Length: 91
Image (tube, rainbow, N blue to C red; front, side, top):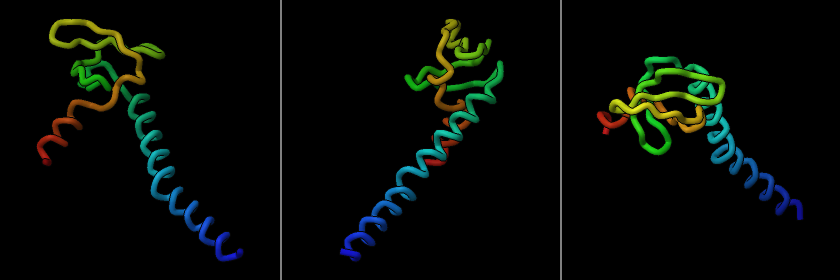
């Protein structure tokens, strides 16, 4: 019985360090990224739309994408365009 309990605790600890903790860290980084957005930044949305930030409100962002102005929720901004370009060149 104690051996089973030790194994269960060990599985929970491994699960925490390999799945839950990295996900929480990534969410924290995304939140910090979205809080630091500024007009003029080039970003990519979750749907893959590339654009330049024109205006930022409390919950929305106005993007200019190839002459079109589109309004997105801040949560739809996934990363900066520079980060995407750097990731593509590192492959």
